[in-house]
Amino acid sequence: MVKTTVSIIKADVGSLAGHTVVPQPLIDVANRKLAEAKETGLINSFYVFNAGDDLELLMTHFKGESNEEIHRLAWDTFVAAAEKAKKLKLYGAGQDLLSDAFSGNVRGMGPGVAEMEFEERRSDPMIVFAADKTEPAAFNYLLYKIFADPFNTAGLVIDPRMADGFEFEVLDAIGHKSVTLKTPEESYSLLALIGTTERYMISKIRRAEDGEIAAVSSTTKLSLIAGKYVGKDDPVCLVRGQSGFPAMGEITAPFLHTYLVAGWMRGSHWGPFMPVGLKDSRCTVFDGPPRIVALGIQVADGKLASDDQGRPLIVDIFADPGFDLARREALELAAALRRMGEFEPARLGPGAMEYTTLPQVLKKLEPRFKKV
Image (cartoon, rainbow, N blue to C red; front, side, top):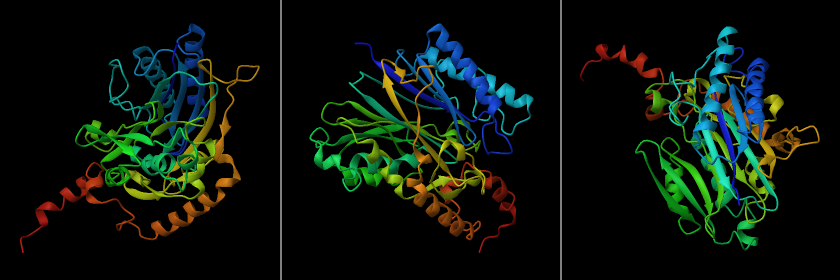
């Protein structure tokens, strides 16, 4: 049986009015490029959207993960959108494109990538998460709650296919190595790692019973690639639901409340993660607060389930007023943190600030220090 691949690839290629939102002309460019690729049979279906100032390309195909043709399509689409952004003199045009030429895979070149290949079930619902003004480890808390916390996910107690737990692949972004830990047996060890969000991030989750892929998250850290601050990583994540995986309502339940993530203004501050619908996917207050959108999709015969006109059927999950409490909490936390100004803990610690522009400021002061 041919396996289906779902790919979400994103990049900041230019934004309207600072780091606020992707304007419609750039989305139009992406839609044209992906429509051409669909006509040639390279991809089966697609959906273009934005998370704040990031252009998001959601595609289905039969090419497998890390396929050169698919990644080239994404790269060429981002380059074309960046060229349009430059003509419009948009802010940060081509910001996430850290290379002048495609080298076979966009990983390590700036764009964020989350892909999974699987044999389709009788019904394959999935949630696509896309975030702005934060880093990949922002998903650590979310994914732990979904796949390891029975207070959030009743299926860990009730569903016999989930009772054996899940295997978490954790990336050490600084040590360039990874480890796999199984829950519930190694839950404490897992927390010991992923609680250090500056260094460790969840990259993949598999069902322990049979190794079936359950979730994937992008792990691109732009500062480590570029060696300096060039913008936040703005991660993406794919999560499969139902029938041996967490129910769709369990996947979204962690956002009944907000939680704090690193990023926000100049990538240098803690901020509350605010779930929003697509219409509110723009970052304004102090370039934020950090936003996350969630799209519910169905994968059917290698494609996004669509209407009779071929338009993908998308559920804009966080547009629901059921997440109003989290939004209110986020704004209250944002206001409290901003009262702190540039004092920790509102500002990130020195380790996280190493790749921002702060060291340039501090370097000027070095000659004035005297031994005591």
